[in-house]
Length: 296
Image (tube, rainbow, N blue to C red):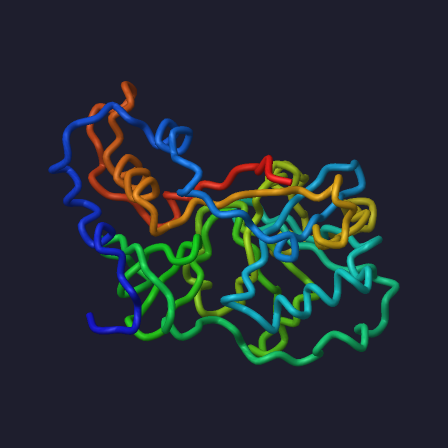
């Protein structure tokens, strides 16, 4: 399929890697043994730190390369303290956890765009793809680019609604998702939402704080009474925190040999538990490895 992607050569033969010598490596062992050259530091300006009422902390990596204007709004909202005193307003079982800003705020900060164009997909120009050469129900092809799970039609590319991905909630009109209300996927990947809602990032840590909340009893999992809500203490960009308090994370480079080995191991499990390897893997069943970074 001709397109503008730079394709990773060893990615094209992902499932042909069975010709390599047999190994007892597991996805976990490959990640642990990956050299430092296989990892890339995530910039502090791309990390949103959400602190809940009980001091539980959720760290979100933003994706400005895919939804730049939405991320710009989220950055402005964070600096304006939009979510401080806000709430988690919806927990729909097997679907999403959603949160909103302080209900006492009546108007958007002047630095925030009230109307944004849909940022559901972008050109694939300039991106490199490590593809999964397997059929997908929602895209002509799936794979990984710049550390993110994506779908592509050969001309445009979009983030996939995998577990832990973060999106901008919207109303019916496509241009109503401004970043003021965000959600994360807590169940089976709702890939039917791909190219229908702007995905703006993913949860790196603290996912359990969002998945273990009581389910909403209202329609679509919304909480019905204030007593049900989980309050938000603050939402700050890591770069706006004191250096000693900044979370630091690395993501595995999805064009690295280690990531290719990891994908192969995910598709062909040789762990003692497995009787028969699947021989394939879904784009959402191969989460891109991330880890806390010790770099200062």
